[in-house]
Image (cartoon, rainbow, N blue to C red):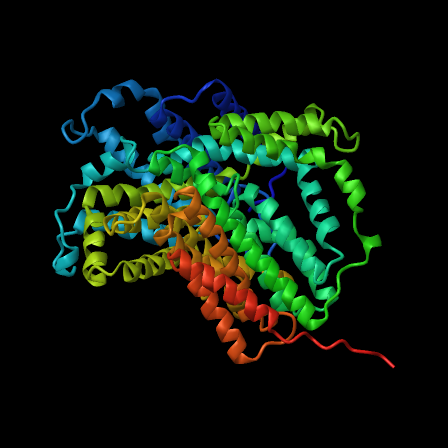
Length: 626
């Protein structure tokens, strides 16, 4: 990013602030019609890509640019023209008939210009992988009858002007529902995050985690897990979460004796899981609600059990590793006191209010606005954090300035969504998956998991999820899985791609802080986050794990989940009450996996077996000093 100064920096500050106020206004008083709201949003954000982000990324040790080159000013102005055309001719565009009315020369030029500049903005902000995927799908739509393509992938090509029409003048391409999520929910929650930071609520999350886990065995690792769960749900970015909390927790973990690669892996797994943790779950969950056409609270409720199992397993494994290796916690005098933290428990009220409003059926935007107001109110109770007009403006600006990566990623993902709709490749993919699986639903899940992992390598979670959902979800639904379970399945694998080598962005970010091997960190993170690879398969077959079954089914799913996470923890760490031999670890692993089998009797027996195996594990002998 450029480090601008002078009049350009001041104008940009006001520009971003105005964008934040616009989105706050539409959140309170109602958004414009979907296509228009998305066009305004993209028109506001896209020029920022050319002003803030340089043509070439900085090399290590290279100082950031402080001025915007003349050609980037031209690109910034040009990127706003297509959106301004939509805003000025909105009624005329709404009255035209798609596929019947011809495009004018102006519309053809502006639509082409928007696609080219959007791809360049995405390259600068998000990276080349998403650009390559978007270009491949868009070009395929035009040449899908080419002789060099396999017969199974051939189809009826779409004329160039109809591609531009679908991408530019409808809400099925660039301006699809994925961009709509960025234009409404995501922007408001980013501003909400800015208020949490300025009001001291974000800082309180860290103090809470330190006070209640810091002195326990492996305390810093538990601080990392708990603080990342709290912070990651708000930030919605695994890498951002790693840098926000890992810069503090990773050095502490290394200080008490954790190996660098293990410390980095703990932070990477904890930070990635934040997007699985209600109430916010990042932008991807809002996109899921839009694609499914269900209230967001349904997504939030469905995600509760899997996310608790995920973090429960990570906490158990870091605890067992600490006890096994004799790693102590931090001295109490270095940590906030529990009494002082409990006195400020009211600082959690903005999150509590948000959860209540979401569960009560209010829209996420109303929930976020209420949380913003309450966070401001909480700041007034602490003179050191009291938010006056200056701090309020800074919170709005600091939240709004983070929107370019999500906006451009969602808009570029819209090119893929539009291409799938225009070319019919989605139907071919469904047929290919069903054909390869030959009716075997488990094999179909494996295929979609691999596709989601590959798409997620190097892409933001939201983009990876949108691409995976466009291709994979129809196949899973065709195989008989619940639509909600299918979407969550793809969502999980889009997220765990952050810790899966060879491209594990969260693991690599943590490794850079810990000064550890990136690949060693990635493979260790995969082991710690193993439940995120297993549970999606389980909830596709057992709706109780996402609270979609009867009361008894849901309770049995809780029981089986607890049995699984404990058994997996003992098996992978090789420690229960003491070191475990290989046969004992294998028995724990088999019992843990059997607990997920969708038969109550099998689950109960497996949980009992896990308990028996724990009781019969050999306690670690107490060392007596002379």
